[in-house]
Length: 134
Image (cartoon, rainbow, N blue to C red):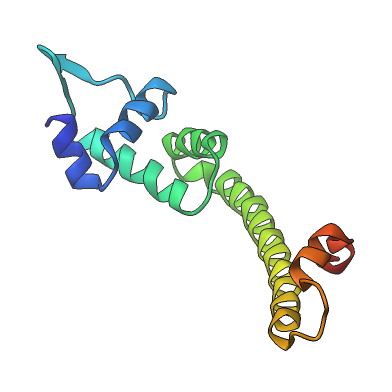
């Protein structure tokens, strides 16, 4: 199949597919004249890569997962460990986002109240917002 068909089947952007080829997440496609040619193995690998990226795994982590997937079930413990580290990072980011949400909500409420002579948001940004995020 052509790169356009691969893109349609997987929902991946053509430029993304080319990028994944360049960095080695996808094997360099066979050529039929000027056109790249892909098969069902390429579809499966691209779906794996795209799903991994949707879950927030970095390119480096996706590479590791691909290596582990090639190892079969004996690599399951290593894949689990990689996922556990990633889950911890995701939970940390969520906690950071919740702190940011509280700080912004407080500032927006202060803006809505209109009690301050200045702008609460600008004042907060000029002041010590980091202390409030802790």
